[in-house]
Every structure is written in structure tokens, then in C-alpha cells.
Length: 212
Image 1 (cartoon, rainbow, N blue to C red):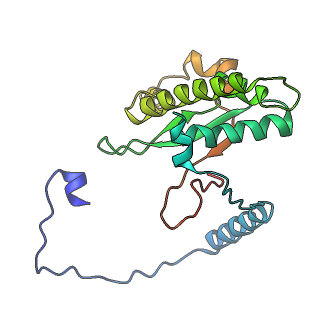
Image 2 (image 1 turned 135 degrees about the vertical axis):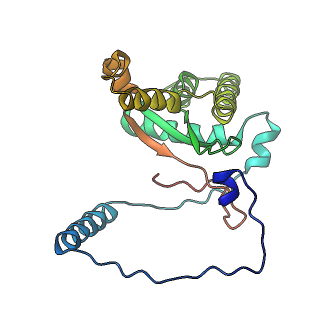
């Protein structure tokens, strides 16, 4: 990525780049650390349970016909499952690419909005919501979710800005800023549900989701 890091284009040609094998010599201490890390990883992996589910009742094209974002429906399903399983909502992360910016990577979409929570509660079996009410709630949560996605993609999310602020302040020798000691910051920083949408023609599912 020479043209990416230096700003100068890399021109192809007949020049050859020599490749030399590098033998890595590890101390016994490092080998022990690697083995310990391997065992920890295997233990964590053994506790992870993934059961793919293919829903064929309808797809994203059908969802779009109702003026609702397919991604917002997927995120709503997560919130509905969280609510029905545990009876409360938690901080939720959805990745958003910021590749439109130079050196851009990701921004956080905070998908557990008040609109998402209201809809999840209304869809509960104990809530006597009418069809019109449910449709209205779906459109509201979709509109809010689309706005958050656009803001994140355009660099107007707030998670990475706060991260940069905190990092630069520490780099300059400053103490932790007051905002990061606030109990509300501890709450929003505790993300319990982490999601990422994978769109690929190789996948039958609209959504392929796993631990991030």
C-alpha cells in the first residue's frame, strides 16, 4: 500500500522483490505464554454456541416494499430476543464502515435506541398492540436507525471521537477527563451485544451474524 501510506502511486514494472525467509526464535518464556494463550482461546471457543437459522418466509426485498430498512429489522430482532430472554435492554454495537475517509476503518452504530426498545416491548405477547401501532413503531425505529447509520458512515458518530479525545489527552500527559469518570459513561461503555452484518452472494442468508 505504498500509494496509500506515502501518497505516491506505485507503478508496476519488471522489477523483482527478493523474499528472504525469516527464522523466528522464541524464548521458552514466550513459548509458554503462547501455549497459555492457545489454551485460553480453546476454552473460550468451547463455550461458544452458534446455531445458524435460515428464515425463508420473506427477504430484504419484501421488507423494502414497506418502506423499512432491512438492517433495522435485523437489529430489531436482536433487541426483541434480548427483551424476551432477559427482560431488559443492553448497550448494542453494530459496525459501520468509514472507508470513504482516508485511513477510515469503522464507527459504532448504537442500534439499541428508544425506538427499538419501544417496538420490542410492543411486540411482546403481553402487550395488546394493534397492527397499525406495530407498523408505526417499525417505521419509527427504521427511520432512526437509518439516520444513525448515515451519521456513522459520514464521520458524525460519537464513539470514535470520544476515543480519539481520550487517547490524545493521555498522549499529551493529561489525566483522565471528567466525562470518562461519569457513571453514565460507564453504562454506555458497557456493550453487551456486539453485531456485524456480513453481506455476501456466497451466503443464502441476508444476515450472517456472529460474535465480533
